[in-house]
Image 1 (cartoon, rainbow, N blue to C red):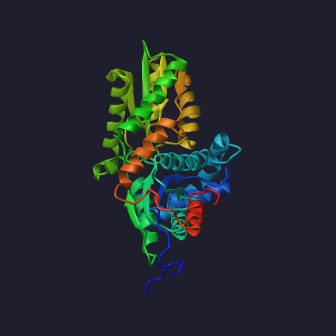
Image 2: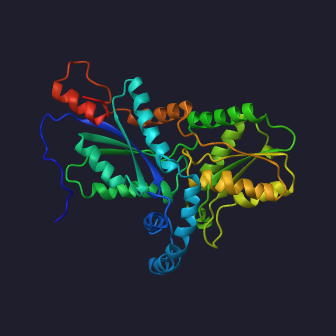
Image 3: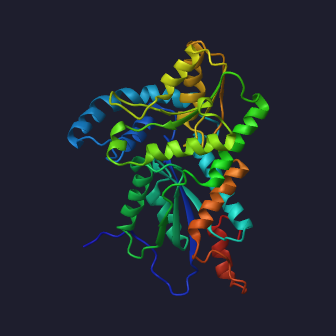
Length: 367
């Protein structure tokens, strides 16, 4: 027999709520070797993330990687950690809160929460909490603009695994990607233009480096559309900014291991631009809607050092969209599009005190 999760007994007349669940990759709970080891152990054990035979990878992961990498990575996390905790978690929590308010202003009364694929709050625990609050319709919105099996698909896997353990399942919808969504592209372009206003317009020898998270080359060969969607985002952003082909470069960061990954590599590109004495380099990371280790440490710190040491001079990192108003507007537009047909507006008829209180608690407001 199936082993179902414990859940409240069904009651006729219970209020039904709609929820939007933002999903991001995850983060260690602290910038310590022990916390990073736990996080990497979960992340790198996912067969969607590392597609090599399990017995061999288990030996490599537990025999080498988890004994060596956590200490080194913990130092990098410590360099970008804030008083409020992990930058990624802080930004995603704020995005969820602000998105709920923006949707409410437009008349869509929905619960908005967030979860991490690896670490806490986990997807299963958050889904259980939403269900307990009365959510019978849940929209999964992974914060990965470009689809990849190792990001978007594995988030859906976790949600589906939770569904298998639920007797009274909620209705669920999935947002696959939004790599070419006009409002997303417009928010990226606005962030670059604002940067130019503060730090000078591009001219002479200039390059806008668009750095996306890398994936092994074999993912492209096996049919993963990620590389193509990154290229499309880069092209649309360049067009929105009026950049000529020689003024921007799409590249890929965070290479791990010896296998070939998607190219060109960001680190190699920055070194080459430094050696060429390119006058000014700006770097933006369009695939990361929230600043994290890969942007704040790998690009803003390590990337800048690579460029300067190679002979470059003027390097600027353009922050992720984070809590920008135009990005939250884009996120709301994406959510509303996928919520179509679901009853997300409160009934104009007076609700009972019990219903009003439950909705208020679920939406995070005082009852």
